[in-house]
Image (spheres, rainbow, N blue to C red):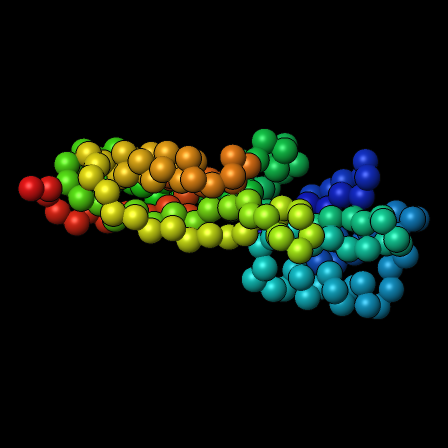
Length: 178
């Protein structure tokens, strides 16, 4: 695992924590102390994959990103950041399930951001709302569209609905209608 480090326009791709600390020590604006060294070493040794922001002074940070890229060019072209083949396959399967036509009853479950009025203040706020409905549809996507169309006529127009492809919508086929 390599490390990409950036402080404003200064950047480097290094192979371990020692090289990272050497690079950071070469930047006069970054005061390296024992706490910062320990913080960087623990981040490098951990299983954490999200980027690490380290504070230099108020409102000034440098960033460290773990990557599989072997060169700076590979990193810039995002060739080795993280493989997403599993996510892409999962998304394709979700789309296929949504579009699979099978007439009948569906039960759709949707989590969305509903705009509601707070009577005491007269202001509005977003509230997470869970909605479940059974409807006649020809596919999972049709079920989603029917639920959203129904809700849009009954909630504030500023409410936010998730994508049918996301994790906030699920459906199951209940059977053929009679």
